[in-house]
Length: 269
Image 1 (cartoon, rainbow, N blue to C red):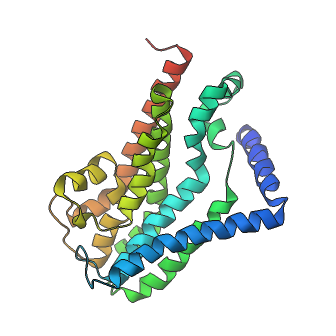
Image 2: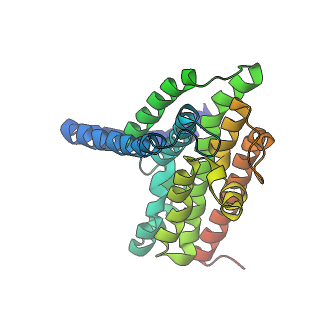
């Protein structure tokens, strides 16, 4: 009972945010359709690309659609849940963050629950639809391990992208006006995750695998599902390490957030 009461302030805050967004239904539906449109345009890029080439980076259109669906599903859910933390520079300039510091609740938890943009469900819906269509198009030798990996991959992708959003927010404690720099790793990572990592040069491939772990969100698991060997620097077996990538990025994100908050409050050494 005490544990449930601990999370009650977050539930109340989230509930009020959701009700406020759905109060004006026409506006909400318009925003939702706009989000669907963004998702369709992004998938159209993949479709048009494969209308001109049969295979790209060892993947055909069916495999590329599966890659797109998994990567975008993870990013869209992460964007829905924590994407608004990239508004931190606004809170820093306006002094809004100081109000969070006065409350007896973790600042990061308050920031994450300060908003949930339900309109972003449109992109989630597009990703789910593409996934439903793409799965039967691929010749996958299903085993218990692969089924487990498929079920875990969207959750892992969500965790990785959410960690990247928190990392990007933490950087703002020092840069303040470095939103574009941070977006290169969040939205740039999402874009890179939607395409085969094998099409990138080796340095870029290593960057989006071991620095910004975008390849772990979809590409490497897809290699496992399709029994493809993978290019140099990103072998297939790394796909099984996706959960570890999520743990590592969150360890880095939380460490960076704590350091940034100490820097902001002047409590660091």
